[in-house]
Length: 244
Image 1: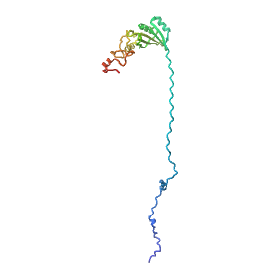
Image 2: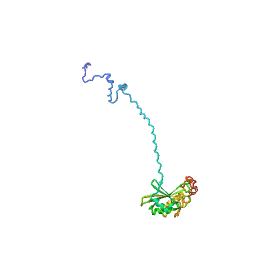
Image 3: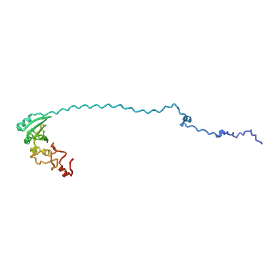
Image 4: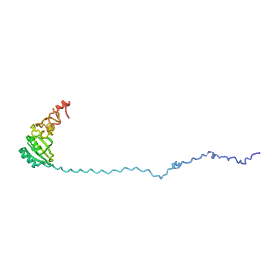
């Protein structure tokens, strides 16, 4: 039997066209990637990026106000003469040895003759009950004939009162020691001797207490050259040329 070419075989597939053979299926577009059209033609309606804003300029600082002038200091009160019962009793006992008495900022001050310092001190301890020697010191007045003040600050426990005894002494004039009246005067008188050169007559062991024994001069005298010091002692004991 001869096959008729016009007769179709139901099992045979139709021939594929050239276009169907060469066509490449397109890849599915990614949902996140922009399309080529979008990349080629970006939208023109997008807003421009914001311009940087300059920081605000701080306002000029106000000029500082001038400090208010300090109020003038009041002058300290001046001493006034004192003639209370204590002073009257001292004058009645020692007469002219009580040179003057004054009150300075509620502090009773009695100036006495230096040669009677021990007797008046013992009377103040025993009769007036000033049983404590708070301090004993000196003050240098180099232009005065009796250049030193000897100052004793006393306190009475029984009366809760204070008294200051003062005496004037010349350079080299002996001052009676009060160590036998108040034992606390021992080191205080040594300090006065060490710093001012005041000699306390009757002191049991009058020698320097702060400076070396061989030191020359008295550091708290107003004519003492603190920059010069005792160059010989410094050179001999410290091996240098200056103590400064």
